[in-house]
Length: 316
Image (cartoon, rainbow, N blue to C red; front, side, top):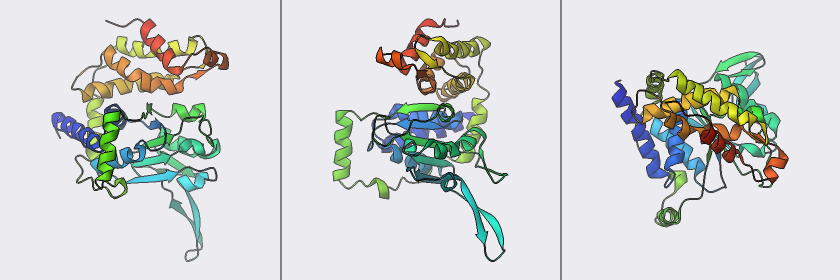
């Protein structure tokens, strides 16, 4: 498939989801960039802001299978990955795959389950496979975890470990829509709109096209000076005042890869510093851990990234 046609299909996917999830264009674009990079997405926002609908609409537009796991305090790792089951007929244990064996996995309210269960996703997110009892099982080539999380101050939530957070390519805040958009959403529901029974129509692209698009993204040129710019921004977050833990080298890698996907999506053959600046807030913010005294002084992860973009010299 020609590159222009690939970009048209990916753009059509973004537009299709925009038609369903109103007023969240930035959120939808972030999900599409994650598909192209590829990477995984952490969606943080209050309940009732269409996070589940977003993942369903994206899967429908792609025509790929999707699964949903409701994370609860009593959820076990085997409930995610699957586990060996004894077969009476064969008198042997057989592996029964869990819901993680899908293309788009909605990990709903991931921070309502203890870190031990959260960590069941680590290998899958980093390596695209699941290992159970010493045997590895590959996941689909198009595999994206979209995890939703309630703000940490909500009752019954657990803090996500740093290793878990670092596996997410981006963290996308899900805000309440603007008044006009919310009125439109309410009106649609009063007119009979039912998200649970939504028919999103035929797919506008496919998993195979996404894989091809990833190959095209890999051909986008990244100047060594822009690569160094990504590294310097991440390094700034490690030495900034009040920071306990800054962005890891994986953060630098994801920033460069994400900027390349964003450049391809807008039709460019090379990455500019502006592409890096556009992706830095959503790629790096969740990888920064602050000292308690810095939080008391009003320092935020967002302000650290903003300081990095303001102080790191921009390559010409």
